[in-house]
Every structure is written in structure tokens, then in C-alpha cells.
Image (cartoon, rainbow, N blue to C red; front, side, top):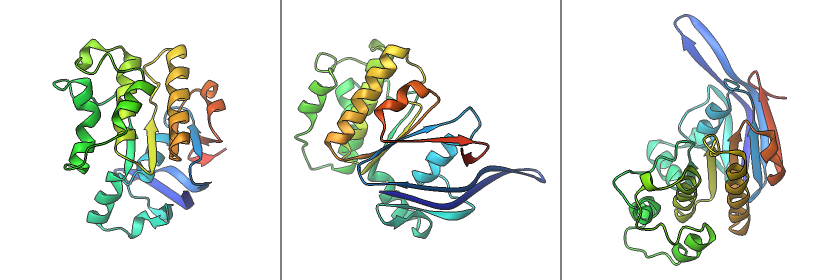
Length: 217
């Protein structure tokens, strides 16, 4: 569950103050999926980074699963970030690791002594069973993004934040990736917040918000 109340964020360029987000309010019930739309520069990624605990707002507050992020110290914030999943536009795979190693990398950092029973079912759900020993350079863009999805889901997240995960994919692959991501999150009752510029992808989501000039339109 995500709650946002009167959230504001600005950047400073010398003596000039640029308001990026202005009095945002939002409620996303547990396990729901939210698509966040907006033009370049509208503040989508900034807002996502605040929800993920990577940036701190100027005022207002964010509560994720009843944790108010502004009340957390650095240690608690680090623990919070370990409990969320992040999916990026540029995949962020480690070139020297195989698909399997990339998928398990974050999980093994977080749960070093625990095996996971979810690995094989997730590999088959994502159609990656023949790619486990391949390096990222041998994969298509859609396949690399599916590895990124697997890595995020294996980390047992309560919430996944995805920043333009289809930005480098064609229309067909974009629909395939988003349909797969939203269905897997629903099966696992995981909140999903996805930043996108594509109105064509919004049918897969329970809720859609449009950011324009720092406000929800």
C-alpha cells in the first residue's frame, strides 16, 4: 500500500528554484498496479525515486506499507530499499555474469544462506530456460528486460518500481513485457508502480496517473 500526501520537491540552480513536484496526493491499495504517465521532464522519475527512498521530498510525506519514509534513518532506509524491487530502462545487468547469475545476484546478497524455490517456476514463466548460461550480450532487449524482471521478483519484494522498462523495446515486445510483469505481480500480490510515456500500455494497470507540470492532471 502506498500513500502520498502533499508531496513537494524542487531543484536549485544557483539562485533559481525549479519546482519539480507540487502538492501530490496519491493512494494505491495493496497489490494494485499503477501506471505513471507524463512527458519528458514532467517529474515521473523523480517521483519514482522518492517512492523508492532514493530521494527525499522537500515537504509532505510518503508512506509505503505503513512506513513513513521521511521518519526512517539511513539504516532503516537501506533496509527498506532491500525490500523493494527496481526495474530499469537500461536493464543494469552485469556483463560478466550469466543470465542465471544476474537473476540470483541480489537475492544471494539479501538471503545468502537460503535457497529459493521460486527460481525454476519464474524461469519458465519468463521463457528463459534456454538462456541461463548465456551472457547479457547474447540476449535481445526483451530477453534482457525479462532477466531484470526475474531479478526484481526473486528478491521477494513487497513493491516493484519500474522506470520506463519498455523504453528500449518495440511495441510488440513492450506489450509482452508489461503484460508479463503485471500478471506476475498480481499472482504474487505485489504492488507495482511503472513509469511510462506510452498510453497504449495503461490497459494492464488498475490505476493510471498523469503528471503534468509537477501535478497530477
